[in-house]
Figure 1 (cartoon, rainbow, N blue to C red):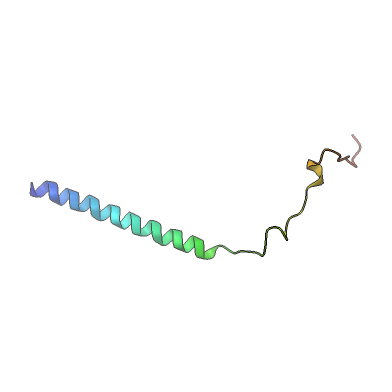
Figure 2 (figure 1 turned 45 degrees about the horizontal axis):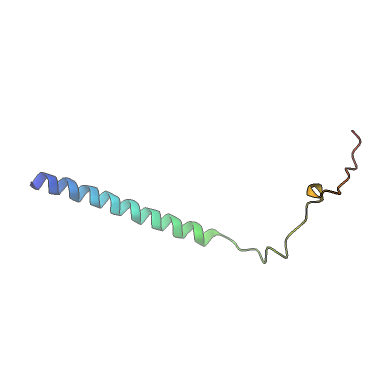
Length: 59
């Protein structure tokens, strides 16, 4: 019985360490994200996706 509890304790400790590492990495990555203004302000339409677009290149 003691051996089973010891193994269970080790598994719980490893899972706790993995969870702590996950939270640390998640917070680190989120802190490095940079918000650059409003997406609507930076939107550029791609005319090649328009139905009326006529290519200026000669085939």
